[in-house]
Length: 491
Image (cartoon, one colour):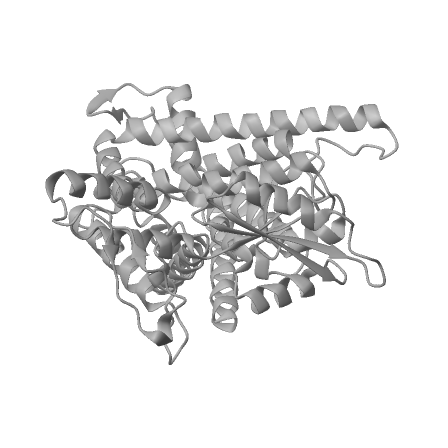
């Protein structure tokens, strides 16, 4: 796949470079087109169904909103950041930022130098095939055909990328128990998550059918999703700087270079970084507003699809509560005929089984109770380095509030040749008594706290690394462990 992707990338870059060279030569030979376009009045804008006279501010504002769609793609790399080598993700963002800025800006300016804005052959009337028209005008019909084929190949690659991205995203959400776990099922032949692929195909195809294949409306819906993701990126960066300012990181945005020895400058640097995130947040909100004002009806379609996906996530996060509500309703509407305790007969080979099985008082209540127990059965792991009452209490409270489990494994890793801390197991036992509804166990491991140990423990306990937690790392080695998918839950 990477060979195909690299081939498509090189082919597309070479095609765009040839187009830019042809447009530059054409512009020098026909300078009157640019002068004519600069004298053309700005076209009226359709805002919420009403035509509004355009000016410089509206042109820049709505142009910026539309241009946000031209910088998409880098967000899919975040789904596989844990599988990338150190430093790769930052290089991806840098390269995509450079290429997007260069080609988008160059082609936008050259468009004014090659094609008129108005008229049947102008940019406004043919906004869906602008690059093909520029290719025909500068390099002839043959290159126009090649430009069209190149566009088809690139868009096909983007569709492939969308499937790769959605598969990684949903797979991670399913591992975090935010999406149904059946989505993790793999095809025995190709080891792909076929349920995710078919589900995404159904959603994407239904969106095309609902919008009658309107490219403008489809682009607007995608803009909503992309801008919403950028809002999460900027908001998440702000939260990390406020809540996890001391967490080790490979890269930190800076306004300019500071001396590491100057604490005052480092403090100011953090403030500048926050302001940069806030500016990015405001700019994304402006793009969101511009897209909304362009065609408000698209927001209804986006809201419907968002509501469906959000409802699924809500059900997964609150399924214990919903099952308990269902139990309460069943007790009221369909009470069991036997509300008293039922005594079960036991065989001589089954003497250890409890003789009394409490009933739920509702038809189907035992099935609901078994479902709740099955959801709460998988354990979670919390790595604890020091004996700390407050830290353990925060971790246990977090798990009880946010995770569906009744089993917490407190894991302490001590260096080879050293003894297990005295009283650690007793301290965990105190918390086990404090929270009787949750089974809290203590596990002591002699070794070095590193990614290999985490992977071994996940295999030994049959627990995904996504269900392992750690406090905020205070060194680079612990930070590498968090990159495996181990979640940071306390500061």
